[in-house]
Length: 175
Image (cartoon, rainbow, N blue to C red; front, side, top):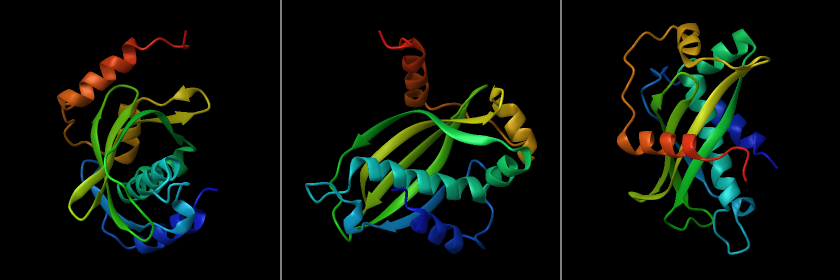
């Protein structure tokens, strides 16, 4: 089940947080509860992605994307991701979740998200986000204009660009 209570708590905690530029990172913390665990008593891989989802929504709220989505009747969807799990996270551990916009192209935003515990990275995802309307994907330039963002466009880090190129070469539909 989606953690609506956790999302509500985070929205309430960050309701008065200062706004962020789209390029500024958002950082939050989460406590791992028994219902977040798998059969090996570790943070479930699906719940990890859900926690990343919660952090991404708060980041979207703080940078103004959420209000833009509501005003334009747009949606936000995950259009692909790559994940690395490196350290175990267990019940009652506290993790710091970081979200930052790494790059964008004509169609997608690429976010670098990571979880940290006691100074060590436990997992990281590169997630490709699309903003959508009834006709399909809304171009990123149109989204940024609607948000009032006219700042710099960062160059994609080499590893992000390599992932973008690998995804473009991947056959669809699968063979």
